Image 1: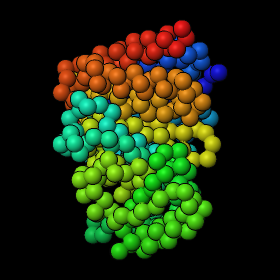
Image 2: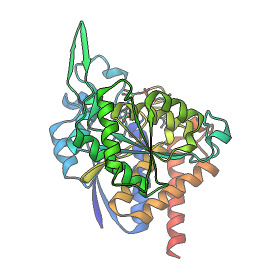
Image 3: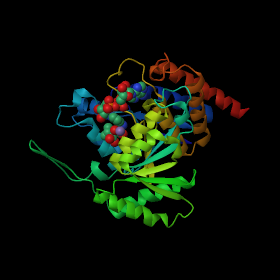
Image 4: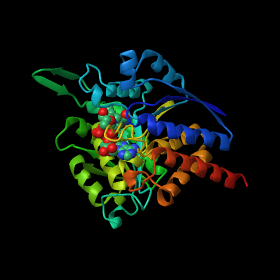
Length: 352
Ligand code: NAD
Ligand code: IPM
Ligand code: MN
Protein backbone atom coordinates (compact mmCIF):
# COMPACT_ATOMS: atom_id res chain seq x y z
CA UNK A 1 0.00 0.00 0.00
CA UNK A 2 1.01 3.58 -0.57
CA UNK A 3 -0.25 6.63 1.31
CA UNK A 4 -0.02 10.35 0.56
CA UNK A 5 0.86 12.29 3.69
CA UNK A 6 0.63 16.08 3.74
CA UNK A 7 3.14 17.33 6.30
CA UNK A 8 2.88 20.75 7.91
CA UNK A 9 6.11 21.15 9.92
CA UNK A 10 4.93 24.35 11.61
CA UNK A 11 6.90 26.74 13.82
CA UNK A 12 9.19 26.67 16.85
CA UNK A 13 9.79 23.07 17.92
CA UNK A 14 7.25 21.91 15.29
CA UNK A 15 9.83 21.23 12.55
CA UNK A 16 12.20 19.66 15.11
CA UNK A 17 9.66 17.10 16.33
CA UNK A 18 8.27 16.49 12.83
CA UNK A 19 11.76 15.78 11.42
CA UNK A 20 12.29 12.91 13.86
CA UNK A 21 8.75 11.65 13.30
CA UNK A 22 9.32 11.48 9.54
CA UNK A 23 12.52 9.50 10.16
CA UNK A 24 10.56 7.06 12.27
CA UNK A 25 7.79 6.83 9.66
CA UNK A 26 10.31 6.22 6.90
CA UNK A 27 11.96 3.38 8.79
CA UNK A 28 8.58 1.95 9.79
CA UNK A 29 7.24 1.95 6.23
CA UNK A 30 10.44 0.29 5.05
CA UNK A 31 10.31 -2.38 7.75
CA UNK A 32 6.59 -3.12 7.37
CA UNK A 33 6.42 -3.06 3.57
CA UNK A 34 4.26 -0.05 2.73
CA UNK A 35 5.18 3.28 1.25
CA UNK A 36 4.55 6.88 2.21
CA UNK A 37 4.67 9.81 -0.15
CA UNK A 38 5.45 12.83 1.97
CA UNK A 39 4.88 16.40 0.79
CA UNK A 40 5.77 19.31 3.07
CA UNK A 41 3.76 22.56 3.03
CA UNK A 42 4.07 25.98 4.63
CA UNK A 43 1.54 26.42 7.42
CA UNK A 44 1.17 28.69 10.44
CA UNK A 45 3.67 31.43 11.18
CA UNK A 46 6.13 30.39 8.48
CA UNK A 47 3.32 30.58 5.90
CA UNK A 48 2.43 34.09 7.09
CA UNK A 49 6.05 35.05 6.44
CA UNK A 50 6.25 33.47 2.99
CA UNK A 51 2.65 33.75 1.71
CA UNK A 52 0.98 36.35 3.93
CA UNK A 53 -1.52 33.64 4.95
CA UNK A 54 -1.21 30.92 7.65
CA UNK A 55 -3.19 28.48 5.48
CA UNK A 56 -2.47 29.31 1.83
CA UNK A 57 -4.88 28.20 -0.88
CA UNK A 58 -2.55 25.57 -2.39
CA UNK A 59 -2.13 24.01 1.05
CA UNK A 60 -5.92 23.84 1.44
CA UNK A 61 -6.16 21.92 -1.81
CA UNK A 62 -3.27 19.62 -0.89
CA UNK A 63 -4.49 18.64 2.60
CA UNK A 64 -7.94 17.75 1.30
CA UNK A 65 -6.43 15.45 -1.32
CA UNK A 66 -4.06 13.68 1.10
CA UNK A 67 -4.70 10.39 2.90
CA UNK A 68 -3.62 11.98 6.19
CA UNK A 69 -2.22 15.25 7.50
CA UNK A 70 0.69 15.27 9.96
CA UNK A 71 1.26 18.59 11.66
CA UNK A 72 3.83 20.22 13.92
CA UNK A 73 2.82 22.96 16.35
CA UNK A 74 2.35 26.49 15.06
CA UNK A 75 2.68 29.95 16.60
CA UNK A 76 5.22 32.05 18.41
CA UNK A 77 5.73 35.49 19.88
CA UNK A 78 6.98 36.95 16.58
CA UNK A 79 3.45 36.72 15.17
CA UNK A 80 1.63 38.01 18.26
CA UNK A 81 1.22 41.56 17.01
CA UNK A 82 0.26 40.84 13.41
CA UNK A 83 -3.22 41.18 11.93
CA UNK A 84 -3.41 37.44 11.31
CA UNK A 85 -2.17 34.78 13.70
CA UNK A 86 -0.77 31.31 12.93
CA UNK A 87 -3.47 29.78 15.17
CA UNK A 88 -6.16 31.09 12.81
CA UNK A 89 -4.70 28.79 10.18
CA UNK A 90 -5.06 25.86 12.56
CA UNK A 91 -8.74 26.57 13.24
CA UNK A 92 -9.35 26.95 9.50
CA UNK A 93 -7.57 23.63 8.85
CA UNK A 94 -9.74 21.79 11.39
CA UNK A 95 -12.87 23.36 9.91
CA UNK A 96 -11.80 22.62 6.34
CA UNK A 97 -11.19 18.93 7.11
CA UNK A 98 -14.35 18.82 9.27
CA UNK A 99 -12.48 16.87 11.92
CA UNK A 100 -15.00 17.36 14.71
CA UNK A 101 -13.67 14.57 16.95
CA UNK A 102 -10.30 15.21 18.58
CA UNK A 103 -9.01 12.10 20.32
CA UNK A 104 -6.44 12.82 23.03
CA UNK A 105 -5.23 9.69 24.82
CA UNK A 106 -3.45 10.25 28.09
CA UNK A 107 -1.59 7.36 29.65
CA UNK A 108 1.13 6.96 32.13
CA UNK A 109 3.48 6.08 29.31
CA UNK A 110 6.45 5.73 31.62
CA UNK A 111 7.20 5.33 35.29
CA UNK A 112 10.26 7.51 34.75
CA UNK A 113 8.38 10.64 33.83
CA UNK A 114 8.14 13.69 35.91
CA UNK A 115 4.44 13.51 36.73
CA UNK A 116 3.92 16.17 39.36
CA UNK A 117 1.64 13.71 41.16
CA UNK A 118 2.68 11.23 43.81
CA UNK A 119 3.41 7.90 42.05
CA UNK A 120 0.44 6.18 43.71
CA UNK A 121 -1.94 8.79 42.23
CA UNK A 122 -0.41 8.67 38.75
CA UNK A 123 -0.43 4.85 38.76
CA UNK A 124 -2.84 3.43 36.18
CA UNK A 125 -3.72 6.62 34.31
CA UNK A 126 -5.29 5.51 31.03
CA UNK A 127 -7.94 7.80 29.63
CA UNK A 128 -9.01 9.33 26.35
CA UNK A 129 -10.26 12.88 26.20
CA UNK A 130 -12.62 13.28 23.28
CA UNK A 131 -12.69 16.98 22.54
CA UNK A 132 -15.32 18.47 20.22
CA UNK A 133 -13.11 20.35 17.75
CA UNK A 134 -15.11 22.31 15.20
CA UNK A 135 -17.76 24.07 17.30
CA UNK A 136 -18.31 25.82 20.60
CA UNK A 137 -16.49 28.87 21.85
CA UNK A 138 -13.81 28.67 19.15
CA UNK A 139 -16.20 28.95 16.23
CA UNK A 140 -19.21 30.95 17.46
CA UNK A 141 -19.80 34.54 16.34
CA UNK A 142 -17.01 36.92 17.42
CA UNK A 143 -16.69 40.67 17.72
CA UNK A 144 -13.75 42.84 18.63
CA UNK A 145 -13.04 46.53 18.77
CA UNK A 146 -11.07 48.67 21.20
CA UNK A 147 -13.90 48.72 23.74
CA UNK A 148 -15.59 45.37 23.35
CA UNK A 149 -14.74 41.70 22.82
CA UNK A 150 -17.20 38.89 22.24
CA UNK A 151 -16.96 35.12 21.79
CA UNK A 152 -20.00 32.93 21.62
CA UNK A 153 -20.35 29.32 22.71
CA UNK A 154 -22.98 27.84 20.44
CA UNK A 155 -23.88 24.21 19.76
CA UNK A 156 -26.64 22.57 17.78
CA UNK A 157 -28.21 19.21 18.63
CA UNK A 158 -26.64 17.42 15.62
CA UNK A 159 -23.18 18.73 16.56
CA UNK A 160 -23.50 17.33 20.09
CA UNK A 161 -25.11 14.11 18.87
CA UNK A 162 -22.26 13.18 16.55
CA UNK A 163 -19.53 13.74 19.13
CA UNK A 164 -21.58 11.97 21.82
CA UNK A 165 -22.01 8.93 19.56
CA UNK A 166 -18.27 8.85 18.91
CA UNK A 167 -17.70 8.97 22.65
CA UNK A 168 -20.02 6.05 23.40
CA UNK A 169 -18.52 4.03 20.53
CA UNK A 170 -15.02 4.75 21.84
CA UNK A 171 -16.04 3.74 25.37
CA UNK A 172 -17.27 0.42 23.93
CA UNK A 173 -13.76 -0.33 22.67
CA UNK A 174 -12.37 0.38 26.15
CA UNK A 175 -13.64 0.02 29.73
CA UNK A 176 -17.19 1.17 28.88
CA UNK A 177 -17.14 4.18 31.13
CA UNK A 178 -17.92 7.64 29.81
CA UNK A 179 -17.77 10.93 31.68
CA UNK A 180 -19.33 13.94 29.97
CA UNK A 181 -17.99 17.28 31.11
CA UNK A 182 -20.02 20.47 30.90
CA UNK A 183 -20.98 23.57 32.83
CA UNK A 184 -24.74 23.06 32.82
CA UNK A 185 -25.15 24.98 36.07
CA UNK A 186 -24.40 28.16 34.10
CA UNK A 187 -24.26 27.77 30.33
CA UNK A 188 -27.14 27.21 27.90
CA UNK A 189 -24.83 25.43 25.47
CA UNK A 190 -23.99 23.03 28.30
CA UNK A 191 -27.66 22.46 29.17
CA UNK A 192 -28.20 21.36 25.57
CA UNK A 193 -24.97 19.31 25.71
CA UNK A 194 -26.09 17.38 28.77
CA UNK A 195 -29.62 16.77 27.48
CA UNK A 196 -28.33 15.43 24.17
CA UNK A 197 -25.72 13.18 25.79
CA UNK A 198 -28.46 11.71 28.00
CA UNK A 199 -30.68 11.13 24.95
CA UNK A 200 -27.89 9.35 23.06
CA UNK A 201 -27.08 7.24 26.13
CA UNK A 202 -30.34 5.35 25.57
CA UNK A 203 -28.68 3.66 22.57
CA UNK A 204 -25.70 2.57 24.68
CA UNK A 205 -27.08 0.92 27.83
CA UNK A 206 -23.86 -1.09 28.16
CA UNK A 207 -21.81 2.09 28.72
CA UNK A 208 -21.80 3.61 32.20
CA UNK A 209 -22.36 7.36 31.83
CA UNK A 210 -21.49 10.02 34.39
CA UNK A 211 -21.49 13.83 34.27
CA UNK A 212 -19.05 16.25 35.84
CA UNK A 213 -18.96 20.03 35.88
CA UNK A 214 -15.83 21.37 34.18
CA UNK A 215 -14.39 23.14 37.21
CA UNK A 216 -14.59 20.16 39.53
CA UNK A 217 -13.35 17.96 36.69
CA UNK A 218 -10.08 19.90 36.83
CA UNK A 219 -9.88 18.93 40.50
CA UNK A 220 -10.79 15.28 39.86
CA UNK A 221 -8.13 14.98 37.16
CA UNK A 222 -5.52 15.95 39.71
CA UNK A 223 -6.92 13.96 42.64
CA UNK A 224 -7.95 10.73 40.93
CA UNK A 225 -6.90 10.71 37.27
CA UNK A 226 -6.81 6.91 37.09
CA UNK A 227 -10.57 6.78 37.70
CA UNK A 228 -11.36 7.96 34.16
CA UNK A 229 -11.80 6.03 30.95
CA UNK A 230 -13.37 8.19 28.21
CA UNK A 231 -14.11 11.86 28.76
CA UNK A 232 -16.17 13.84 26.25
CA UNK A 233 -16.41 17.59 26.30
CA UNK A 234 -16.80 20.90 24.51
CA UNK A 235 -13.94 22.38 22.48
CA UNK A 236 -12.59 24.88 25.04
CA UNK A 237 -13.03 22.66 28.12
CA UNK A 238 -11.29 19.88 26.19
CA UNK A 239 -8.39 22.16 25.32
CA UNK A 240 -7.80 23.11 28.94
CA UNK A 241 -8.45 19.74 30.55
CA UNK A 242 -6.24 17.86 28.09
CA UNK A 243 -3.16 19.95 28.95
CA UNK A 244 -3.91 19.28 32.62
CA UNK A 245 -4.37 15.56 32.02
CA UNK A 246 -1.23 15.37 29.89
CA UNK A 247 0.78 16.93 32.67
CA UNK A 248 -0.45 14.54 35.35
CA UNK A 249 0.10 11.65 32.91
CA UNK A 250 3.78 12.48 32.73
CA UNK A 251 4.26 15.59 30.65
CA UNK A 252 2.91 17.56 27.75
CA UNK A 253 5.75 16.39 25.55
CA UNK A 254 4.20 12.91 25.50
CA UNK A 255 0.56 13.57 24.59
CA UNK A 256 -0.52 12.78 21.02
CA UNK A 257 -3.79 13.38 19.22
CA UNK A 258 -5.79 12.45 16.18
CA UNK A 259 -8.63 14.49 14.78
CA UNK A 260 -11.19 12.75 12.65
CA UNK A 261 -14.48 13.45 10.99
CA UNK A 262 -16.29 11.31 8.48
CA UNK A 263 -13.80 9.54 6.21
CA UNK A 264 -10.32 10.74 5.36
CA UNK A 265 -8.09 12.61 5.81
CA UNK A 266 -7.51 12.72 9.53
CA UNK A 267 -5.27 15.27 11.17
CA UNK A 268 -2.47 14.11 13.49
CA UNK A 269 -0.71 16.46 15.86
CA UNK A 270 0.77 16.69 19.34
CA UNK A 271 -1.38 18.57 21.84
CA UNK A 272 1.53 20.77 22.92
CA UNK A 273 2.51 24.04 21.29
CA UNK A 274 5.56 25.42 19.52
CA UNK A 275 7.44 25.85 22.86
CA UNK A 276 9.22 29.10 21.96
CA UNK A 277 11.19 28.83 25.23
CA UNK A 278 13.15 25.78 23.98
CA UNK A 279 12.82 26.13 20.18
CA UNK A 280 16.07 25.86 18.21
CA UNK A 281 17.92 24.05 20.99
CA UNK A 282 17.32 20.54 19.67
CA UNK A 283 15.98 19.31 23.01
CA UNK A 284 12.23 19.11 22.42
CA UNK A 285 10.63 15.77 23.16
CA UNK A 286 9.39 14.32 19.85
CA UNK A 287 7.31 11.61 21.58
CA UNK A 288 3.93 13.32 21.23
CA UNK A 289 4.37 13.79 17.50
CA UNK A 290 5.73 10.26 17.00
CA UNK A 291 2.78 8.80 18.93
CA UNK A 292 0.42 10.95 16.82
CA UNK A 293 2.01 9.38 13.74
CA UNK A 294 1.35 5.95 15.27
CA UNK A 295 -2.33 6.93 15.59
CA UNK A 296 -2.18 7.92 11.91
CA UNK A 297 -0.75 4.54 10.91
CA UNK A 298 -3.50 2.77 12.85
CA UNK A 299 -6.21 4.82 11.11
CA UNK A 300 -4.61 4.09 7.73
CA UNK A 301 -4.95 0.38 8.51
CA UNK A 302 -1.28 -0.29 9.30
CA UNK A 303 -1.95 -1.52 12.80
CA UNK A 304 1.11 -3.79 13.15
CA UNK A 305 3.33 -0.84 12.24
CA UNK A 306 1.40 1.41 14.63
CA UNK A 307 1.86 -1.09 17.46
CA UNK A 308 5.58 -1.36 16.75
CA UNK A 309 6.06 2.41 16.91
CA UNK A 310 4.02 2.69 20.10
CA UNK A 311 5.72 -0.16 21.94
CA UNK A 312 9.15 1.06 20.83
CA UNK A 313 8.45 4.55 22.17
CA UNK A 314 7.08 3.22 25.46
CA UNK A 315 10.10 0.97 25.93
CA UNK A 316 12.53 3.83 25.29
CA UNK A 317 10.65 6.17 27.59
CA UNK A 318 11.07 3.60 30.33
CA UNK A 319 14.56 2.32 29.55
CA UNK A 320 16.38 4.51 27.07
CA UNK A 321 17.93 7.97 27.14
CA UNK A 322 15.20 10.60 27.38
CA UNK A 323 15.01 14.33 26.65
CA UNK A 324 15.49 17.01 29.36
CA UNK A 325 11.74 17.49 30.01
CA UNK A 326 11.82 13.95 31.45
CA UNK A 327 15.04 14.54 33.33
CA UNK A 328 17.39 13.08 30.72
CA UNK A 329 20.12 14.47 28.49
CA UNK A 330 19.12 13.09 25.08
CA UNK A 331 18.57 15.45 22.18
CA UNK A 332 15.47 15.35 19.98
CA UNK A 333 17.58 13.69 17.31
CA UNK A 334 19.09 11.08 19.63
CA UNK A 335 15.65 10.07 20.88
CA UNK A 336 14.34 9.89 17.29
CA UNK A 337 17.30 7.74 16.22
CA UNK A 338 16.69 5.38 19.15
CA UNK A 339 13.03 4.99 18.10
CA UNK A 340 14.13 4.21 14.53
CA UNK A 341 16.45 1.45 15.81
CA UNK A 342 13.79 0.06 18.13
CA UNK A 343 11.16 -0.07 15.37
CA UNK A 344 13.58 -1.90 13.04
CA UNK A 345 14.32 -4.43 15.78
CA UNK A 346 10.60 -4.87 16.51
CA UNK A 347 9.91 -5.52 12.82
CA UNK A 348 12.69 -8.13 12.67
CA UNK A 349 11.28 -9.93 15.68
CA UNK A 350 7.81 -9.99 14.11
CA UNK A 351 9.09 -11.31 10.76
CA UNK A 352 11.10 -14.11 12.36
P1 NAD B 1 3.52 25.06 24.76
O1 NAD B 1 2.85 23.74 24.77
O2 NAD B 1 4.21 25.45 23.50
O3 NAD B 1 4.61 25.09 25.93
C1 NAD B 1 4.28 24.94 27.31
C2 NAD B 1 5.52 24.42 28.06
O4 NAD B 1 5.71 23.05 27.73
C3 NAD B 1 6.81 25.13 27.69
O5 NAD B 1 7.62 25.26 28.82
C4 NAD B 1 7.45 24.20 26.69
O6 NAD B 1 8.87 24.27 26.64
C5 NAD B 1 6.99 22.83 27.18
N1 NAD B 1 6.87 21.88 26.06
C6 NAD B 1 5.86 21.82 25.16
N2 NAD B 1 6.07 20.84 24.28
C7 NAD B 1 7.25 20.27 24.63
C8 NAD B 1 8.00 19.18 24.08
N3 NAD B 1 7.60 18.50 23.00
N4 NAD B 1 9.17 18.86 24.68
C9 NAD B 1 9.58 19.51 25.78
N5 NAD B 1 8.90 20.54 26.34
C10 NAD B 1 7.75 20.91 25.76
O7 NAD B 1 2.43 26.15 25.18
P2 NAD B 1 2.50 27.76 25.10
O8 NAD B 1 3.84 28.24 25.50
O9 NAD B 1 1.31 28.21 25.81
O10 NAD B 1 2.27 28.09 23.55
C11 NAD B 1 3.31 28.47 22.65
C12 NAD B 1 2.74 28.68 21.26
O11 NAD B 1 2.25 27.43 20.73
C13 NAD B 1 1.54 29.63 21.21
O12 NAD B 1 1.68 30.44 20.08
C14 NAD B 1 0.34 28.71 21.06
O13 NAD B 1 -0.75 29.30 20.40
C15 NAD B 1 0.93 27.62 20.22
N6 NAD B 1 0.23 26.32 20.30
C16 NAD B 1 0.08 25.62 19.13
C17 NAD B 1 -0.50 24.36 19.14
C18 NAD B 1 -0.69 23.61 17.86
O14 NAD B 1 -0.22 24.04 16.81
N7 NAD B 1 -1.36 22.48 17.86
C19 NAD B 1 -0.91 23.79 20.35
C20 NAD B 1 -0.75 24.54 21.54
C21 NAD B 1 -0.17 25.80 21.50
C1 IPM C 1 -4.40 22.84 20.82
C2 IPM C 1 -3.98 24.31 20.77
C3 IPM C 1 -4.89 25.08 19.83
C4 IPM C 1 -6.30 25.04 20.41
C5 IPM C 1 -4.49 26.54 19.54
C6 IPM C 1 -3.06 26.66 19.10
C7 IPM C 1 -5.40 27.16 18.53
O1 IPM C 1 -3.96 24.86 22.04
O2 IPM C 1 -4.41 22.19 19.77
O3 IPM C 1 -4.69 22.35 21.92
O4 IPM C 1 -6.63 25.85 21.28
O5 IPM C 1 -7.06 24.18 19.96
MN1 MN D 1 -4.26 23.40 23.62
